[in-house]
Image (cartoon, rainbow, N blue to C red; front, side, top):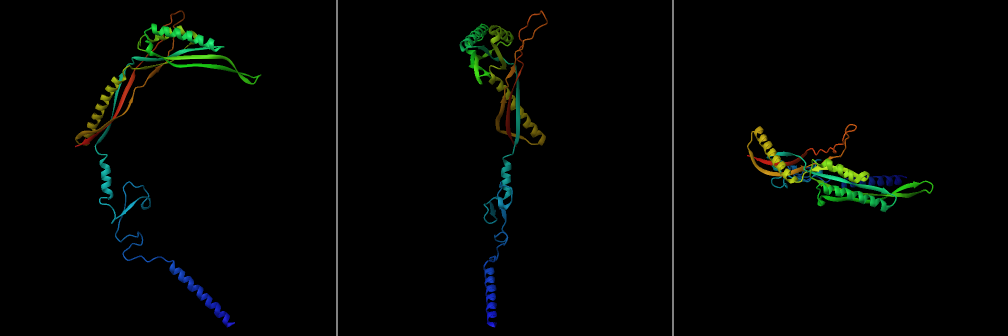
Length: 297
């Protein structure tokens, strides 16, 4: 009985001794003398973040230690180098020229419907021929007339008894674009076109522009540059510095909107004559935008 208890006691002591040995083997390695247990670097080393690295501290960007950082890699010099790219006086300028349109772009045509393609095409062709005759008779050159759209389309109706679609006829559409330069006679021209085409005529819209836009763009560009220079000089005066030479200039935008008008005939009082369709071209604003950078002396 005593021998059995002795064997159990020896086994317990052996188990405790084995556990202690494993614990000592898995423990942390002693930190060498002169090495920081926090950073793992020599005592006195400094961790410097790279300029431009994402926010988030040490773990989110590349780092240099005080002993391995490249020469001149401190934060301040790099920020100063970046700031020098923003030096100078930065301004924008806008130039605007008001133009009276001298060119009208008309979109018009004819549309015919009939039971057969041949009938619809014949009606559309006759109406368009009459429209073309009026256009050329009123000084419109052939080169200023261009076909925009031609289409032959069947028309359907649903047959509820047969449960299917059936063709009931065809539509022929012929649309042209016309350049007209006589602004005063534009209303009369539209009226004559409407008379020539009859019920088949379609006048979609009228847009106004200018024949030589580059001439007005040049004027607007000159005004934009002068505006930018004036602003730069004002900045220099307000801040007490001397305006330096022009370092950079670029055109950032241009615009010449096309004004659209829609023909609308207006009747006079009963028994009175019908005046020409009133058409007003109005004015167009041509704009240019520039950006400029000037040095500071």
